[in-house]
Image (cartoon, rainbow, N blue to C red):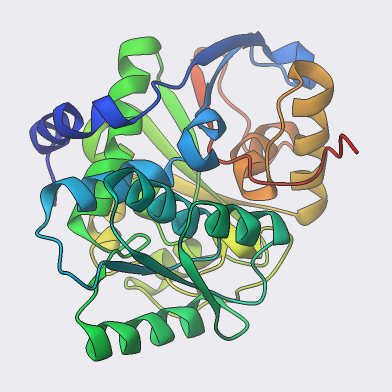
Length: 309
């Protein structure tokens, strides 16, 4: 377990390196849902396009760095966050990604100066390759979700959100490996309802809760480059079991629809994983009670869905 006190102390270290991403209040009717008001935290505006940069800076600023630099395995966003933080800290970085990583994320990682390797088809294979690199070189691994520093960094999303929208009773978060939901849930410590949202084709947390432990799950679908690590983290699971109310599953079509609604209504560009939490509301998979005050995290925007060319 990690504590809100630890998250606050960590925020003081990493805050100078982050953007304090905004919260926008919208009418539920704008998205075709009955909830009177929604609070959307636009974390896709974070450096490198997602919340992952928070955990990356936490590792780089609080751990002893070897000469070999850092390494990470990622579907794309974590790699971009680590590459960005390493660039700012002037530390060498080697990022391993699976072949499902989008061209936009691969380009982003290399533009930040990291050495990029495509290894395998899915995240688990990229992770194996990165672990071999650690053994070979002594580079410091920065895990995408199952590491204390990563959880502390992602938990700062909750710290910010509570200061910006302190009246929330419910928060919807997308789930891949679980670092985000575990970090944010650790901040709130049961004071609000936390709901995890997963693609139907990548139900990692849902399967873990059913089994009572992390287990392998399907790893596919439109958001496979950000929400399909095959299983949730060992550190993540006890936090989730203690603080997360439930999970809901959404279809790929629902995620695409949520992406379109964000663009049409707010001119917000979200990648599939970034729009998944909103999809739970717009598809009716999660229906709030009339008295609920609902927040949604738009957690990533690394996509080429809008082509200005």
